[in-house]
Length: 72
Image (cartoon, rainbow, N blue to C red; front, side, top):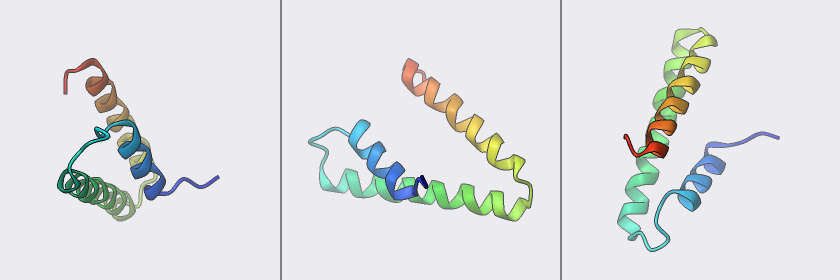
C-alpha cells in the first residue's frame, strides 16, 4: 500500500489538530506540512543518497518522541 503525503496530512489533521481549530490554523498547518515534505523530498533527491531518507526518518521520529513527552 502506498501512503501519500495527503494520507499523512489527513492523519496529522485528525490526530493532532484540535477538532475546533480555526480554518486559518488548518490552512497554515497544511501549508507548513507540505512545505516540509517538499523540502525533505528535494533534499533526499538532490543528495542522490537513499540513506538520507533513513536519516530524515530517524530525525522525524526523534522529534515525534520529544513532542509526545512535551519537550518540543
